[in-house]
Length: 187
Ligand code: AMP
Image 1 (spheres, rainbow, N blue to C red):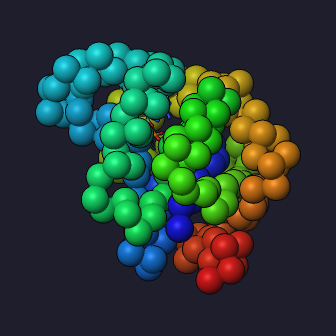
Image 2: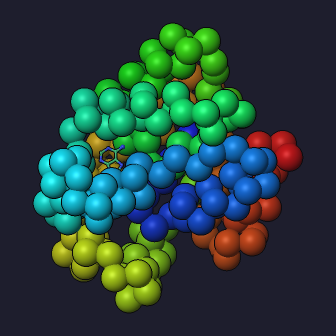
């Protein structure tokens, strides 16, 4: 099974991706985690992306596409995977479509985790105090939401037009949202 998780920062994609990847024994690919790890390790990639992540802007499409292309070729992705945080632009979505075609596989569904902006802000504030993420400061939070609206929201129509989109009510607690998610994918 190959799934894309879509939703604003703080919508619960990461939490739900962890739960579902455990249940289905498929890989959880979080591009945000991959980039943060690169920053922590001080690798060339990490040095290139640190200031971009800290500002809440997006890393270039070219770099992200290359990163995903490599990642999905790894052995643990054979049984399927959840893309958490990719694609985030129409260009990335088009590249993903091409990638799938070349690999002879299909995207099973795109799950949109839907939650109000006020709830998103509340969750990001909580996460800022719990995880001490530099990109969860109040100013950067606002920018991340603005960038999401401008660059990622168009993917909702993009995948809806392809009849691939399924909406998951993400306004409740993690357990209830997980039930909503299972229902959406028929599990
Ligand atoms: P996340 O943890 O998914 O919110 O990602 C943290 C940050 O990593 C984002 O704010 C972006 O700067 C960067 N990032 C993660 N995934 C992507 C992507 N698909 N395209 C561009 N930038 C990304």
